Length: 135
Image (cartoon, rainbow, N blue to C red; front, side, top):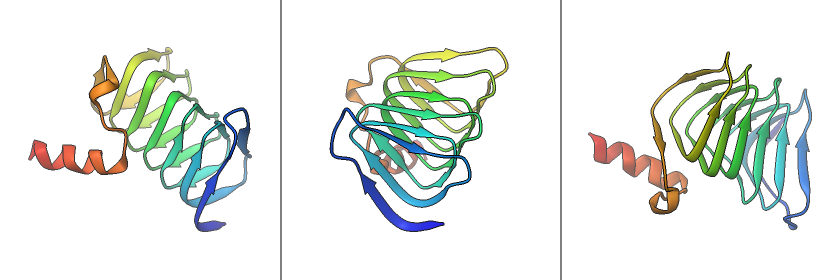
């Protein structure tokens, strides 16, 4: 298992694939797309797309332009443009996105804010300050 690491891709045209059976603990950051079929304990951020496959599991925040979830995610999801919850998706956490598509069979438990995300700060710090402001 990879612990406490941060991976950064250099080209927005590259795609990073985390295969089934791979477990990562730490922050994952990429300028290109990320496809996850393994497990991540930590935050994921991409300037492009994040795709969580059916076998993928994430326990942490996801920030990306577009996000597709087909596996299990526990944490806040922030898509600048579009979030898709596939039929086998299981999301336990809050959503911030302009557009949301939910297929029949998907499970979502949390709060959802849709619309122009231009005013939403997509950093991990903003979710902490949002929680403090609600209290």
